[in-house]
Amino acid sequence: MREDELQQYRTSGYVIFPGFKSPGEIAALRARAAAIVDAFNPSQTASIFSTSGDSARSDAYFMESGETVRCFLEEDGRSVNKIGHAMHDLDPVFDAFSHDSRLARIAGAIGLRDPLIYQSMYIFKQPRVGGEVSWHQDAAFFDTDPPSVTAFWFALEDANRENGCMWVQPGGHRSPLRARFIARDGAARLHVVDPTPWPTIEEATPLEVQAGTLVVFDGMLPHYSAPNRSPHSRHAYTLHAVDGTARYAETNWLQRTKVPLRGFA
Image 1 (cartoon, one colour):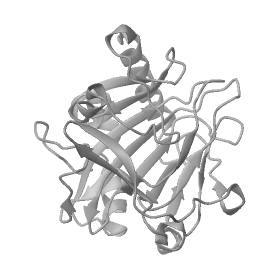
Image 2 (spheres, rainbow, N blue to C red):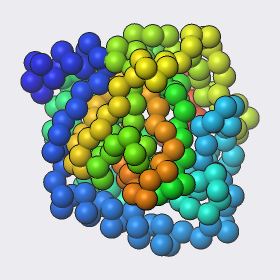
Image 3 (cartoon, rainbow, N blue to C red):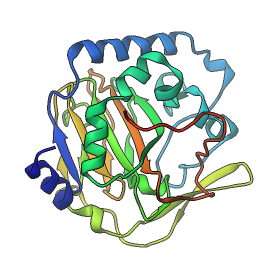
Image 4 (cartoon, one colour):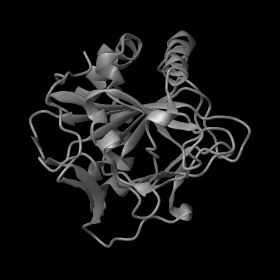
């Protein structure tokens, strides 16, 4: 990681690495995701992924997904929104994509002394129906003391304003944590902890990037993506890692008790 890249991360809360993954690596991951979806039986669950309003909540299908591989539906109930949340440990193709010595070096450079990957997500952002992901901070879902969760986001297709690219607030990682996703009695719900307003779109920067790009961003960084109303999908893959030297909250929804935690190397 170059010094200018590290400075960009510290100042803005994110850094972009174009061409990080090869077309072959992307093709393998996309083919495996397609196979998982082909084997998915929607009648087995009614679980729908949504982040709008207070609907960032949970059911048993979601709460038990941290140590398995499950598909989640768009709000239309017909198309798949994402796959989560332990492919990086349980599926050989996702494992190979996720465990990369270059990622270990980046994690160390930005200050993760003992990076542990808690979660993986394959996001489809389906053509015309891909849902909005409202403003949020990933630290709301992975509370550690001190804060440490970091996102490693891979563009598997070109992302632009037309197909719902991610928007970020440069420097917003220095703003307060606004909410926490707290688990109690087998369910979890988003609770507001600070009334600081979310950024306006005028304060945000669109991350229009090409397939193969890696975006690394601080878990405190506010980010958002608009609905995809275009005829083109916007596939992406995300890993969330925390520092194993930090205290991981018992109220976090994702608790790894069966599948051992690993880092990037």
